[in-house]
Image 1 (cartoon, rainbow, N blue to C red):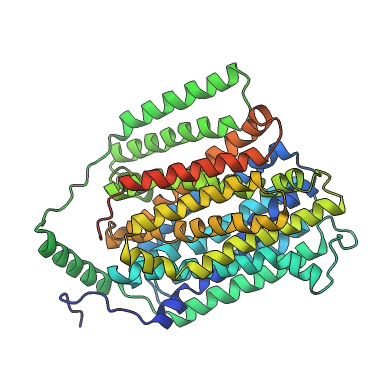
Image 2 (cartoon, rainbow, N blue to C red):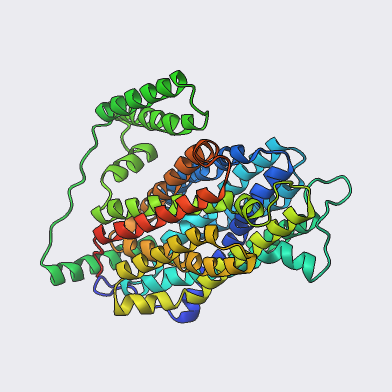
Length: 507
């Protein structure tokens, strides 16, 4: 029998461990992608200023996949559970993609595999964020997202240094195998990643039991009752119906005019990603308006767009923080290999021993920031307890911004490990604090949908970065990619300042 007068029970450390373990595999896949895909693209002949456009596949996929998967998982309940069916389907597909990726014979195949791989990873990843909101009471959510940060860091550090370890500890060649283009150590790293991804997600699926929809409804009713008693606020937020037709016309006109302007000034093709995105958003709202006028209002598209326009205030405030944070991260992921091999190792020849030495060191640096992230993951909830989640996140982002900018100053590769300490602190916080703040402001029945929508504010800055960073490097920075990392550092410090404006309703 379900008791409406009880909140969610607290879970033990090992229960939180088991429910978060799948993120070890998810981040293993992401880290291999982040540390090696630019290298693969360059090896297959991509020009450095064109690399961001190839990376657009990843954020564009997340923009589409995550809200859809979130909405679907909110409305799923079968003998396998609510979120777990998506965990396992995404893991199987992502593992296959990881095995195929390093065998890409030409550039366009590698770009296509990045799209497929990222789509598959997103199918598994998005429900994991909602999973914490489903399973944990408010007072344990910070710890739950910190546990995810721990596994993200652990998986990423191992995956990032794996090509380096295979070469220096096990004498695996950095030359391609016969008939292949990608170095053997990178190939083997992706094969190992596919295995780890599948096993880690299976662990969570087997070890964690989900609450039923009826249990979640009872828990939410209890939480609303307790909040009303604390604040004296019994009001229910009115859901406003967006004016889809009017909004669609505005977005369509703006998108078309901006696209025409880019055409007239003969702007870079990447800029069409931004103008095209604005136009597509207008088209989606037009479709929603037509469906509504036809009496077909209750569908996924209308519901997702309605929830977007009715997002909680806290979510809108966090969106600004997320924009500047993830712009910085995407700049780092795209350009660290090129920046360090050219600025510190002094080469842009992708076939040279020196370039591959620098590229391998980038893997170590990525391992360093991820390693530091997983080491401090459990310290962040302690710091938040004695200060606040907002203060903790602000300090972390400032450290990350300074870390990125310091790469320009340091000429010794070993000193870059210090830079990565700051980046690692920011990364740990980015993976936990915004979600812990967000979860307390979301309705239980729409946890997956809103976690998917929240991904917009991770994806949009990445698309903006991919659209303009190549242009900035070529025109403003005279081809010196190190300045893209400096710009990322400035962006992260702006994000830290924006944290002041966030309203943490749980605190």
